[in-house]
Length: 340
Image (cartoon, rainbow, N blue to C red; front, side, top):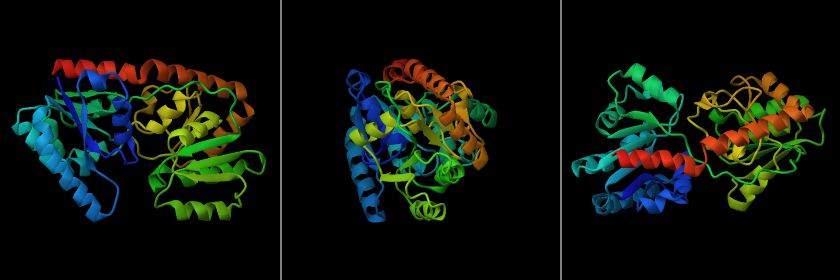
């Protein structure tokens, strides 16, 4: 059996490429003779178009050689961009898996004809959490090929001595809520001058971040290392006191799973399917979307209550090790491949 993954370029910064790269390092990659057809990239329109054309040419050659075509995409632009690949695979009578990287915005996708088409003709449709499967079955009752598969993560060595900073790692966009973290931290920064927040990433929202740091005079307590990768990424995760996620829209955020895999406690909004497995004050601290006061309280609570911090960190680490480790998820994926 041979499996071809179709999705974003490995150079893309996002959940799709991260998931495929994680699977690429697992035992499943050799077991099913996997390969990766890279079709999309973040760049200028001309480069994007050229990259897609190259993807089409490669796809014409590669897709006939594989038994299962595993699409990793999102249901809006992704189903449009990859529509040719889907039709071509269907024409060749390949088994098709579509894994959707989508969260709270899923309900709006039901009205897209391409989404319905993919849902109808794929052999298996995977969502990031059980909540989305149930939602789909309520909206489209005749679905019988839908299931969920959590994102995999490589569990790391548990951290030993945390440093005095809260970590945030994401693209700087309004949806990610990095402004909420700055405003919340500003409420307690004067009380804890030795503490800081580290905002890793880049994006369109960077000017707003710079302005907030200036307005709240947080120059000494905010670090902006840019987009982090590899050893630099491990360093920041290993040393963080806690990880903060303030997003309004997510599916199953990889950054949360990665933080848990290092034994870092999580402070987060109840976004996506996180409440399927995280419990407030047990394996995470939840705060409501955009609620600056609640987030400020959560930050201070972890600073002052080290036993609670350690409890959340230990529970989260055990949870991700038992349920989200790469080999655990790949066993479930292997079962799906074999069933097809």
